[in-house]
Image (tube, rainbow, N blue to C red; front, side):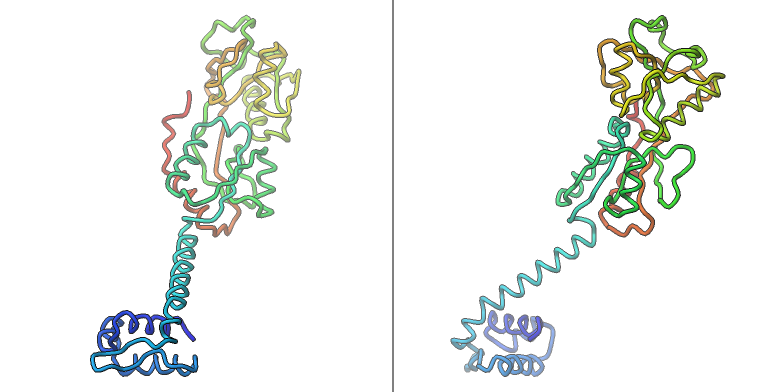
Length: 301
């Protein structure tokens, strides 16, 4: 028994006329009659009785009709579900982001836009440092990740760059430069820095260290923190100064101030969407396409 047999049966059952049913199906009446005969032979019982004006259902046909409708309806639903999944309109998408990227408004904008465009896709959000995110992508336990790639792209990954984000100096309010609106990094030579380990934020760590070297000094790390969100807390506690992505400055904390960096080549916080090569999940492709349309105008300066 094939689905076409059920479709032919349903057409005749609803039209109660082989000629009208054949016209509805777009086939000739003799082939339709033969298909119904084949179905009746397979079932071992007649489904229709011929009448002077067409046909009528037998008791077997009456019993068969709701089940045929149910099977055809299930097949139609299965087809629709498969097509929606093939277009990335349903299913699951696993999205990762680094701790510093979580503060970037582009991240929330892309995720919000995706949820609005594809409400039936279930999102799983995972926060982890860039190194961990890249490992998860390689292990196929993550579909797409907002990472901090640094100047050199990680090997074995496809990257879709997003807008670079400016960085700011963060000082305790008690600092002698706290009243300034901007500052060159060179003026921080000899200051103790609060910084996260290179393994936690490899690209941001290297960007800050390299920027200080361009300014003519090696920074002194007085305190390491496990994650970037802890940097501002320790600066407020006067453990030292630091440099953070500008988006973090939108969260005002008592005891700190943020200054623009007045250098010819200031550090930047790079961000990109990473996927593993050969990523074929339609929902991931939809996510990347939406991300490419998000303007960078709402990035803090």
